[in-house]
Length: 231
Image (spheres, rainbow, N blue to C red):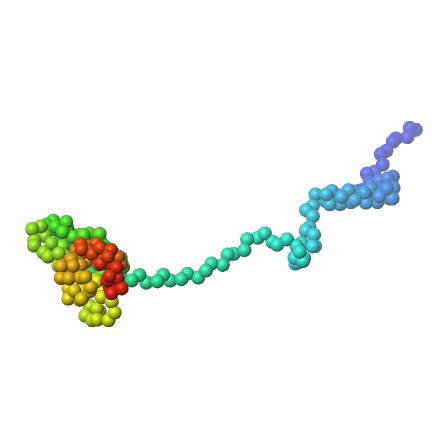
């Protein structure tokens, strides 16, 4: 009677794994697993970001003779010194100006600046009678006449006279009266009147040498009174 071939019954996974291990060999399986782990570890080592060196966390100490750090250092600024107050002159502006009154100007201000502070001239003002460039003395009165108005030269720019200012020491030619000026050697009524007219019309004398602006005072007369006058 012919023998019929019957296939072996299917084995489960565990039996097949054991059969495969028996065929491959346990030692070769372990060696293969170790080799795979080594290869994976090497690949990770190559692609990972290396940690910073431990020296980077240490404080930096400059050695003697080492170059100075090039980092910019803040520049100390000097404390602000408040500006000294500006001295001023007080002047009275009257006549043909828009806003007559008393105004305070900087020292060395000119007649035209005082008129501007008073709002400027009116339409009937005659400014040609004034020296607009003349400097202003403290306490002066500036009068701007109207066209056709008769005003003496002394009334246009009236420099105040300080009582007692000419009693001690040299005569102040910007404050002295005609009588005070008459007492100077070589100065008579005509010259004293000319001095007063000049300072009223063109502003105070800024130096003794300015007296040569006055008709009748030349170098010789100025030399004779130089030590007896002041401004």
